[in-house]
Each structure stands twice: as C-alpha cells, then as structure tokens.
Length: 304
View 1 (cartoon, rainbow, N blue to C red):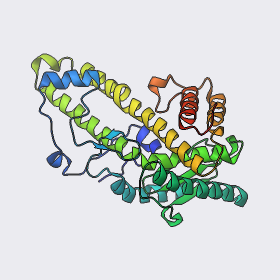
View 2 (cartoon, rainbow, N blue to C red):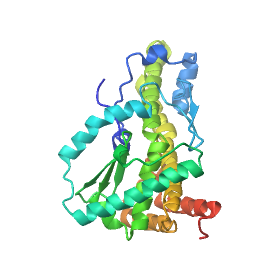
View 3 (spheres, rainbow, N blue to C red):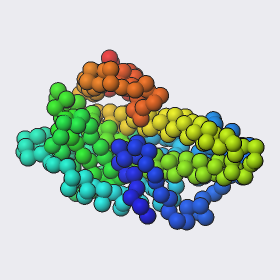
View 4 (cartoon, helix red, strand yellow):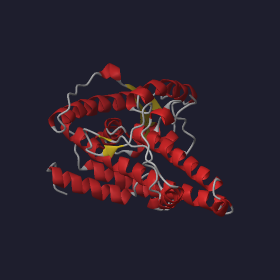
C-alpha cells in the first residue's frame, strides 16, 4: 500500500488515498443506475456507496470508517510518517519551551481521561508512554495529531498563545481529533469519494450520449464532492474537536474562557488571508469563537 494521508494536513491536501486490496470485495454496495450515479456526483451525495456507518461513542456522530482505515490501522501506518516528520523538521532546543508544552500536555491529557470517564462513560486512563510529543522549531502557527497518538506542536502556535490556558485549548483540540476518529473518517471519505468518481467515469464512458460531456460532468462531480462533502466534514470535525478539547481542559482545571480568546488571536493573525469558509477545511475563527462561547454556557463551565 502506498503512503496514506495520516495527518489532518496530509488529508487536506487532496492527494490520492489507496484502499486495501480487498476493499471493493469486502465493502457492502448499494446498486445504482447510471442516472443515479451521475445525479449523485452532481449533488455531492454519492459518497455513501459504501455503507457500514457506526456511531462514535464520544461525539455521538455516525461515521463511515472503511476497513483498513480505522484508527488502529492508521496508527500503525503513522509511525513512518511521524519518523519522517521528526527527521525533516527541526525540534526546539529551548528546554523551557519544551517543558511548558509537556507540562501543559500532561495536565490536559489527565483532564481528557477524567472527561472521557465522567462525561462520556468511557473506560479511560492516561498513560504517558502511549503518547509522543514533539515541539518543532518553526514559525508555523499550528499543531497536529496523528492516529498513533503522536502530537506535533510548532513553536509558532506557542508564541501566539498568551498563556497556558490557551495552549491547553490547542492541545485539548488535538486530543479531541483522536477520540473523534477524524483521520480515519476523512481517509475513508476520500476513498469512498474516489470510488464514486470512478463509478461515475465508468457510467459516462458507457453512454454514447454522455461521452461528449465527460470532462464537464467529471469536473462538476469533483467540485460537488469537494465542496459538498469533504470540506463540510472537515469543518464538522474541527467543531467536534473544539468541544471535546474544551471538556478536557475544563476537567484539567484550565480557564475555559481563554478558549474563545484564542480564536480572537487567530482571527487577528489571519484576517484578510482566509478563503471563504465554504472553501476551507476549517471554520471561520469568528464562528468557532461563538460556538465555543455557546458550548461553555451550555455546559455551565462559565457564563460569557
């Protein structure tokens, strides 16, 4: 199998994702006519060619996870990607910065275990040896997590944050991606989308009437899937990770009112350089801030 899109950044590039060899043989199918295939491609609704959705026990969302793309499978594959990342990107030599990140992570991760147990009725505990944290010495204002429970934090995001409460917002969010199984769902959705596009291409090739419009229909279908399915799912994952991260930092004793402040800072930094939300993998910072405020108030963590 070729290298998979393991991290959020890698998945968001739109590169090809290869399915396991037995994927088409083992996947459940829904019979579809040519007309229905083409209509689905145009509407961006054809992705559920493969059924077998399960409910995530933490988020409560119904998820499409294709065999071979579950968290456990991606965790094994992420080892090589993580090793490459550490080999290619310099890590900080600033011991104070590294200690700050590791201390904040340890506290947030303990809050995660408490939240998963108390709020989500999951049998959870925190084992530090199950996680690997790296602090990369670049100006990138970001952090990421891999399914193998590797967390990468760039120096740029630590410099943007004004305090450890805001840093915990970032770290909790990344842990939320693991519990939301977001990498697994995104990779599965990309594979399903590619299968849908292939099915549509076959249907077009078999129709004398549609052959002359093949390129136009294919372009329309690709845009519909990208803007109507993949990007909305990505934004949904960001909101889910935001909410989970807030629960984790609250249980860790951090000040949850600093979470909306973080998105003020992100908004100020990216203002004028963002694409419209419907074209983005991430929600607008202002919308994320408001959703966090709503969640904080609904949970009774504070009243903003």
